[in-house]
Image 1 (cartoon, rainbow, N blue to C red):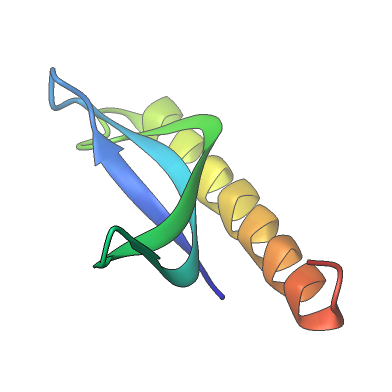
Image 2: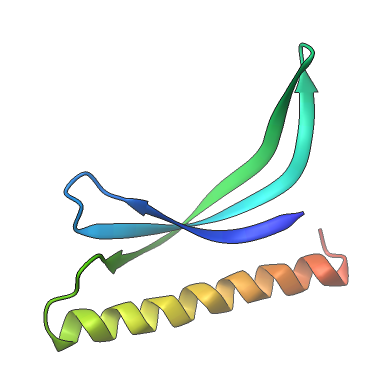
Length: 82
């Protein structure tokens, strides 16, 4: 299983929405190999090009929170909870 953090650009191209992508391998449906993945929204966003110190600070804080959540899920998987 591979757990990664992905950024999805919104329509205005001003923010990235953060999701956790959990890839569990492949499954076969009607003789076609398809990826078995789960995308979970973190309900957080990053500014694409931060303007000012508030937006830059927001990006730093959100990246730390997202990496912490990602590392927590990876540790749970490694310890056998999944």
